[in-house]
Length: 481
Image (cartoon, rainbow, N blue to C red; front, side):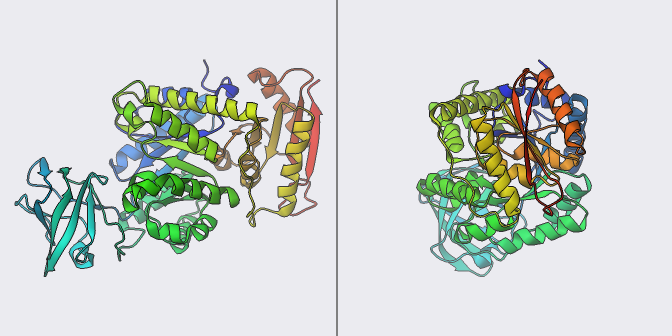
């Protein structure tokens, strides 16, 4: 099967896959795209710059060889606080054990812990909780002294060097964009990646600062806000409005807030993204058991399906494709779950609420895209074609969750790659944004070759005439002769 055929066997919900040691080579990347990957994520918290550079080059080569736009998301590590190096490989923490965090670079005492954040011992207070190993181990601060914070284990488990530290409810003074993030953002902009995500976002101002930095490097990359701090939930609407997209980062989020709250918080985040017409990715532990198994649990399958039903534009695989034993099987399984869920949605006419806050998109464009969907449904059209320069028109179409497939065409390669994150939009290269007759002819030839169009089928086109500045104001219907 060609990497790009048939399009209708790919889910409309997009798949983001993390690149790691088991998936960075060209052949595995190709296999992952064949099975349904739309966007590859480079996690800057792990790996070396040379490895990430090689991954970018392999993905771009793959995209060119097979004629399919493929998105690249650079995930900045953010101010992630981590344990320092432990004197032994593993420390077993038993309930009631006493530990001490010290303001040192390293320690040879297994009861003394260090971190990569020198101010940690200053900003913790008596009664605060320190969560380690993604919340598997919990300690409570019992007392402070100059240069040290004493804790007692309240939830036992094992800890290892460099594991993450979460501090629920603690207001930290650390900058959202670290020096390493700044360097990685500049590198991402220079490499013309399509998406840059910022970890541990706490305010809209942090998103704006990253946007300014990226723009100053001449990059139109979309900025994705990762929601994983309680402070972000307090100003969620402002962050969603400022960002170009959002990631529900359930790993740290589920540690920073009560884990029992996570499902409803996820639904709230997705709902706000719908209102603001922003793409949203649901991430972390979606098919976690497939690190070691060829089959997911029933709960994981349901989790993926519920994310789609909530209105997620994309679901993300992390360790499953970065370090897991079955990266290709994980992507194939996620695509299968998506197809089955979307089929049921189509048959039962389940609809996700449409956007209500779309100030940055021209009102004429919003109305025309809405009308085009109604016309396509009434005429039983087989395809809707959206011509877009920046991708905003296609974004509005994606949020309508129509059952009729949609193709996005653009004169910008980066816009085409960014369309890979939009629900239900098939980015198509090689279609000229000139005369409408040329567009129709190119789409007709592609559709017949792809198999998604037959003689006599109707296609609805959304294009602009220039009569309304920055707006798409023409809907036309074409019947394949």
